[in-house]
Image (cartoon, rainbow, N blue to C red):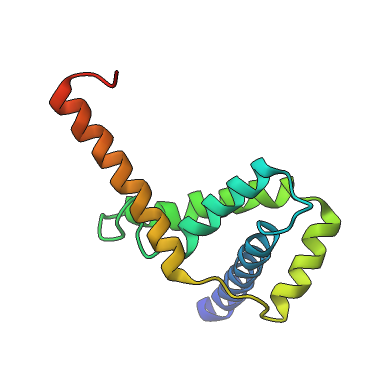
Amino acid sequence: MVQSRALPIVESWKERGRELRLDAHAVYLASKDPRMPWYVKLLAALVVGYLFSPIDLIPDFIPVLGYMDDLVIVPLGLLLVVKLIPEEVLAEHREAARGGKDVPKKWIAAAAVVTIWTLLATMVLFYLLTGSLK
């Protein structure tokens, strides 16, 4: 009996996961659309870049916290970007995402995240060595 109640829950989580993946792809496609405002493009690029990056803000091996970015931060970021995208643009890119058009390259996202982490580490090191950010 426990298994029969758990199955619909698992299926609903799988469906939500598929929807998030579709939205992530649609947001990626929308981030390159000229009809989008620059600030939405920037936020979309950051969220999708982080999502597809193999490098996490909080490493997954840290108990509980390691998966918080995957379970909370990424879906909230996607939700925010989806709300900012005009409905007709989002519908168009969701349809393109269903067709598998223009799948993002993971190495580009990884390079962007590595660059940001390197810049942040350089700033922290500079601050520690000089005592200021002047």
